[in-house]
Image 1: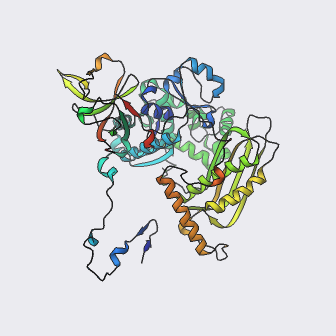
Image 2: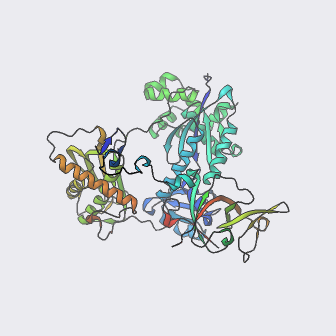
Image 3: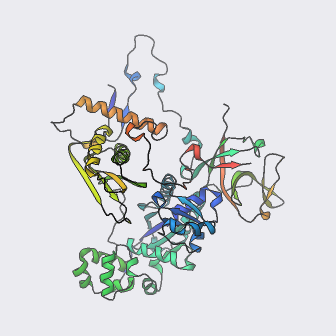
Length: 138
Length: 428
């Protein structure tokens, strides 16, 4: 018996389960499970989640490096302390949303970059909250 | 006159959907006039509010306004259906979470049902949906609420046209309904076609209020049950149900306009073959098989040559096998080809679709079961490979030569949400 047709789906029953081996039974037999799906673990709001790519080192102290892939959830409301994506004067930018003396500002995680004060700019919009960054070691 | 119902229907649609999709994923386009061109970069089919403000008209052929757009610094984009399709999928799924039932009406419109216990005010609900979708997708919605689909459609029009509506209008809770219905001309009523509206106008019926109050018998005489239903809906009765499940598809069509008109048979054949490969892939993804394959080609609507031809082949056994389909399409392309004409558009249609699961193989099948199984495995493998490694990782040689007929997409934006190689980059 190798496969089973239901009306909608075809799924295979692993051959392993039914085989009777002469030697010692595989200790893994009872643990045949599904693969880990990273989407499922990393993304809780798939319909408002977007991927972006980072260039540069302005967030290096937060562990976000050049070429990293970041996962952004637009459904979340940004809170101070969150790393966020903002649209500023026609550009995407990634910064940490911070608060000082009751004033919200955007902080780069790199001393070489200045803080960013909302009131100095005309067109600022918080676009989404960064939930993960993925760095390749290759 | 109106029945007291606790249920309401809302027509929700996304404002300037294509332009909004582009603006939400590309910060350069924010607050800028943006226009989207139709397939083949022909006409303007969508405009951002900023472009509307510049009085750029819908449907204008691009070449006519090219210089003007340039001068006004308008961003011009080819239509990017992988982006719009993905954003639409997101939008509809989000709406599903907040509505009881949803009928997806088009890429950017849905009818939804909401319960209205004790004649509750639905403005807060509508405001919630609007702000939620704006936060999640950066897209602004218009919400029209009514007792039924026809009135929800009208409410949506009113929501768009009344300045103080803030994108929401509930026709079932307004006190001066007559005044509002008067603002909707008959040709703007959902379900009223050109002929009907001409007839109504000849009878002196100009707007929704007059149609609602028109002599019932006169409507029935001319428009039958359809007209009666329309009038009843205008009065507030619910006649048209939400269609929850998608109707099964009657046919699958893949057709495109050519970037430059073609005159050679091999070009026509190549184009049709490319479409046939796409169409058979679509069939397989929906478990469908066709037993009537049609191809067609036509000259430009605007040219003095007005020629179109189609040809089809009926099959004893329905199929979704690209190899079999290609053989037929290549033959059919010879039948419709005519060297005297410049073809500007061609396509294939898969008709008489049946669901493979219920398909009975005819006894006199010209192919053996073994061959059928072999071809099914081959097709499945090709589909899997194409899914895994980019589209067209594997395709048929017939499509691989120089393509002189490819569509113009000179201003295509990136597939920012569906292709990892094309996701937006944040610099600094």
